[in-house]
Structure formats: C-alpha cells, structure tokens
Length: 78
Image (tube, rainbow, N blue to C red):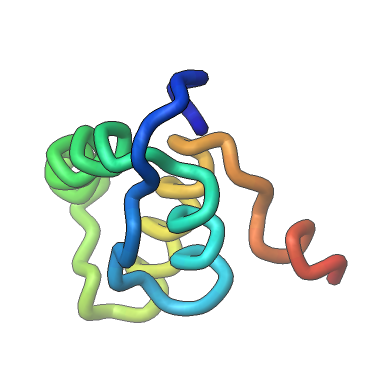
C-alpha cells in the first residue's frame, strides 16, 4: 500500500484497464479517498478537461505518479 499501512484495499475504483487494476491491488481505501479529494485540485491546477482524451491520459499519468505506480508502458513491458 502507498501509505505503508495494512488496510482495506480500495476495491473497485471505476478506472479502466491496467490503471484500475493497479489501484485496486495496491492502494488502500483511505489513500484512494484522499486522492479523490486531491484530484479535484490537480484538475483545476492543470486546467484538465477529463472528457478530452489527452487531458484524461495526463490525469491518469498524474494518478500513477501520486501512488508511486509504474508508468503503464513499464507495467506491460512495452
């Protein structure tokens, strides 16, 4: 877990593919809850529009960075 604690996992987070899988396996519910609050500030800070593919991909990249997850390319080996 990101926080280093043994806690209940985040469960289904509703994110697609590898990112959702990685979060569901490696992020606790408490850290996920904190990210959901932080995510709003991140979206506003960068002026992201999640409905636009490029902005959504940047948000996913920032989400991976926040949780210390490897980039998607590293995760899949390509």
